[in-house]
Length: 186
Image 1 (cartoon, rainbow, N blue to C red):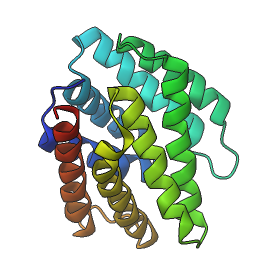
Image 2: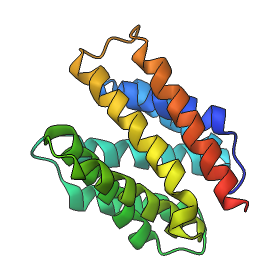
Image 3: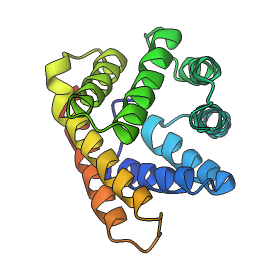
C-alpha cells in the first residue's frame, strides 16, 4: 500500500468516477481492476476479486436516496481483508463509507461546513489505513475533496466525457496521491 504511482492511481480513479456517474458498470469494473492493481499491487486473482467487491459496494451505495450503506460497509470490509494490512477491515470500511456519506451530503446540500467534513473523513481514512498522523495527510485529503467538487460540477453539467473538467479532476487526483505518497514516506 505504500508504493504506488500517483499518476496511474489518479488517472484510474478519475476513470472510475466518470463511469460511476454515467452508471457504466462494466467500464467501472475495468477501471476498478486497474485502480486496485495500481493502488494496492495485489496478485491478479486478488485484484480481480477486490475490483469486483469495489464494484458491488459502489452499486450498493449508488442509488440516491435509497442506498444500502450497511451492505456497502460489509462489502468494503471484505475488500479491506484482501489487503492483509495490520488494520481492522471493519473499521477501514466504516471510514471508507463515511467519506462516501460526507461526499454525498456535500453534493446535495449547500452548506460550507460540509466540504470540511469531507476533508476530515478522507483524512481519517488515510491516517487509519496508513498508520500516520492525521495532519500529515490533510493536504492529500483536501486535494481529493477538491477533485470531488470538480467531479460534482461535471455531473451537474451533464457528464460529458469530452468536458475539460475531467482533465482538471484527474490532475487534482494525481496531486492528491502524490501528496499521500509523500506523507506516508515521511
